[in-house]
Image (tube, rainbow, N blue to C red; front, top):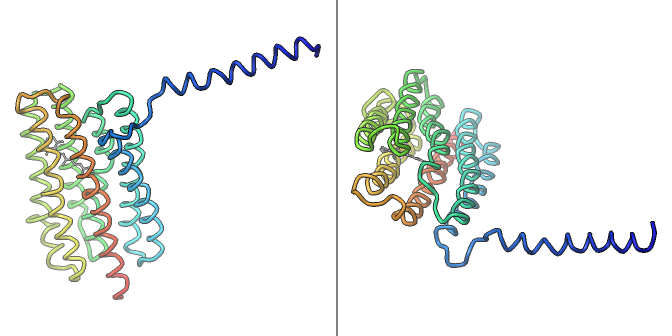
Length: 259
Ligand SMILES: *C/C=C(C)/C=C/C=C(C)/C=C/C1=C(C)CCCC1(C)C
């Protein structure tokens, strides 16, 4: 290569390096006072740590509990991945429409509700009917909520029908076949876990329909309540996904050690 061609190759290489900062300037980073963005990041990390924990702890519990812990880890893994994406959208656009959360819910909520069935199966003979009623109820709840938020259905009918589906699930875990089995046949540690878990389905999960109500049914602009709603949903997810998993972990460890 001649001297001048070497020089021009060097110029090309250097100028391509010089364009790197220009790219960095155009992509946004999390700013220090963006609490919503920081809560997305914080919870992403908590979900990653929880995933590692649940997966590793499957080594410690009796065989019949391993599936429950694996499912807890899958819930936090799916949610963590989703949170990375939602944080990015938030940082770039200062909005993360709730509709994005449905992609996460559609996988994590049926997995969470399956935990009731798995726990009952670990302590006795749970019928397949329990499984299908819980899956059916939560799927209907989410599909109807989505139809309302995405505009395929009126927001009010969607809200009412979705809430009825949620009540159906609550009925099953309190007064239905699952409820009876969980509070009579289970050993004490499992019974107390079962009761805390179903209280989470009532009180922890209530945050989402309340958010829907304030976002869509009070006449306000959903975009305006976006920041506060996201913070509320983010912290609710810590209880409903990580906390829920920790309760199962505690029951699994206690029950494994007493055998
Ligand atoms: C980890 C995420 C969880 C546990 C999400 C749960 C979501 C719900 C319980 C949503 C329920 C809704 C209603 C009961 C009515 C209005 C529409 C929804 C989908 C927000």
